[in-house]
Length: 101
Image 1 (cartoon, rainbow, N blue to C red):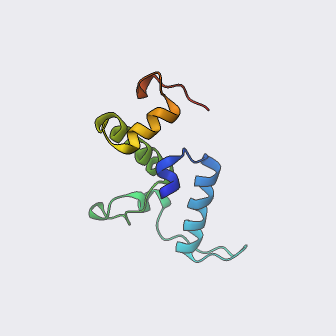
Image 2 (spheres, rainbow, N blue to C red):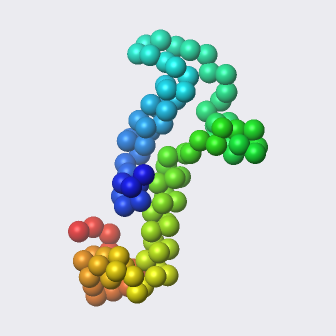
């Protein structure tokens, strides 16, 4: 989760994490195929809606990055924001910063 708060994780890695979760949940081993009693999309549904409350890794990664952006925009006096500003966007505001190093 920490890495997801700091980096936009590549989709191929997030897909692999979801694949591992599916294999763990349904008990598949190597090439063995088991019956999936619930559709994977249904597992993403909230528990109150009859789902299992599992997270969509792509959406979760975006949400954590958006939370960090919100903190940067709203807590301008924090040490984290000052440090990031000095390192990554010293001559501009956060929303005007260029992507890349």
